[in-house]
Amino acid sequence: MTIISQNRVPDALPDFRNLGTQMRILLAVNLAILMMSLACSDSFREVANIFTNFSIVVQPAMLAAMLLLAAVNQPLHQQSYTRGVILVMCGTAVLSAIAAMALGDREIRSGERIMRAMIYGSVSSGVLLNYFYLRNRALSPALAEARLQALQARIRPHFLFNSLNAVLSMIRSKPRVAERALEDLADLFRVVMADNNQLSSLKRELELASNYLAIEQLRLGERLQIEWHIDKAPLQAKIPPLVLQPLLENAVYHGIEPCETPGIISVNAYRSRNEVHLDIRNPFAPDDGKHHAGNKMAMGNIRERLALFFDAEASLTTTVGSNYYQVHIVLPYRE
Image (tube, rainbow, N blue to C red):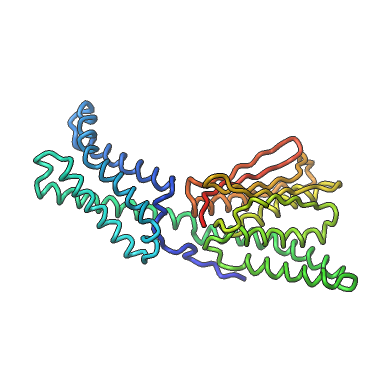
């Protein structure tokens, strides 16, 4: 049994190139300016003027800091987490001082006001970094890992039992096929039981998906047919591990097993500009009450991991047609 790790994702600075990170910073800083304006004003009529006066200094410093952090995002992530935090706070303080000297009036250019701007910039960046730190922990607690392992513990025995039976049935008649199936099974379970807290390559995930479907084809035979559309797939793109396999498992369980006739699972992977698109489509029939509907835990866990690694730049959508079910994932392209 895998031991549940308490710190599943290592401490790391946020991705300053990420659109979701940038939007959160903009929203947080403007909300802080608004709160300060409300606190410093005697009436609501003064709020707009005070907000404007604060923004004249704060907004340019914030935008300059965001541009600088996006430019040095990779070197920052090569530093230790503590050193990265210190560099970000110091850089923000310096930019705040420069903005105060360049854009403020004579009073703001005084040494006391410049020092205050540096303190505000440094403290604000520290608060935001702490928010991203807590958000990172909130998206990957031991509880979420325990939920995933509970789901896997429920699925694995059924899948393992059926796979071993399929292998046993062909050991004598097709020993090479049985040997290959056992290798695929071992490879798949090795990855599932590993501590998957780092991004994987699309090539590796497609290989695991192929191994899984090959095992299922031993059991389902001609009932399971696969269409691969991966000629234009960016194989070196980074994606969260174990994203495709749970979706294909759902496609087999909910799309192929309930059907008496052969069904097709279509896997499509391609790149469009700076985005990676993953499509999985399987047959769909209205629920007749004879097949378990599922509890959506696998889908929810995938959404959590997409948000953890890519924030607002990644999405997972589902489409239910008259005779098909489709899952569409969009990720930012990263090598």
